[in-house]
Amino acid sequence: MITRQLGMRLLAFAALVALIGLAFWSQSAAFASGGNLRSLMRHMSVQGLAALGLTFVIVVRHFDLSFPGVASMGAMTLGWLIAAGMPLPVAIGGGLAVGLAFGLVNGFAIARLGLPDIVTTIATGGLAIGFSYFYSNGTSISQNFFMSGILDLNDRKILGLDMPFAILMGTALMGAILLHASRLGAGFYATGENPVSARFSGVPTRLLIVLAFALSGMMACLAITLLVASSGAANVTAGNQLLMPAFAAVYLGAALFGRPSIGATLAGTLLMSMMLNGFTLLAIPYYYSDAIVSTVLITAIAIFDPRVSALLRGAVRRKGASA
Image (cartoon, rainbow, N blue to C red; front, side, top):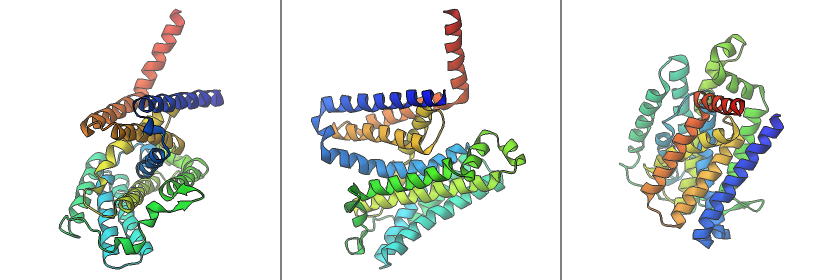
């Protein structure tokens, strides 16, 4: 039964991909060109990494609104370290450490102190944005970028794949092992589904919530590292474009496949990236594309909400009984 349901969901996903692809291809043949598909995968890599980190927070039934601000601070930290002449691994590690630190703060405040997640993460995200201005008074940083090797993260290939997409796939594989093939992963889901029962069963729920936020912050900074590598500069607005697509990808994937997971998030990210790429290719104004992304997010949240799901299932059962 489960295999049949998964097959139906995969068919529905494939149909959506085909429908979206055909719609944009009918308007512009360039949509299916090799260059545009590579561009789509690069865009998917940035959004996908942020969405993968957010997936862990959603699995434990919390929200993280800080990661765009944290990503911006990670970008500025990375740029400042590169401008200071630090080796590239040190600079990247410094940026990731910023995300990890803010994630740990979020997790501790929410899991240990009992603070509300939305208010807490809005506050820490604003704090991160404020700190990011200290590096260069808000101006972009690009000094030493061409000599540091960071641009290679965007230009090199691994096993025939562009480096950003290879990083996304490698990270997704590690995330899938953690979330779907380990006791920790089962603990994440148990924490989200019934934290009281999970705690009495010996699951370290508080620790897992802290870990989920730490992963979200660090993955956001990894995503922004790829964005900095593609743009050749770090700026304080770098993380602004992560929030809506990441949430939409996670919830859209969860709506399609029944629950949040690494595979579902990748599927949602692909659909969102296809739409955003198509809008850009057709020169559709950003406010229209933002409105569509917002609509997709609201629809996905409504479908994923258990109350709405139960209502829809009840309606289907009543219709079947009456027939």
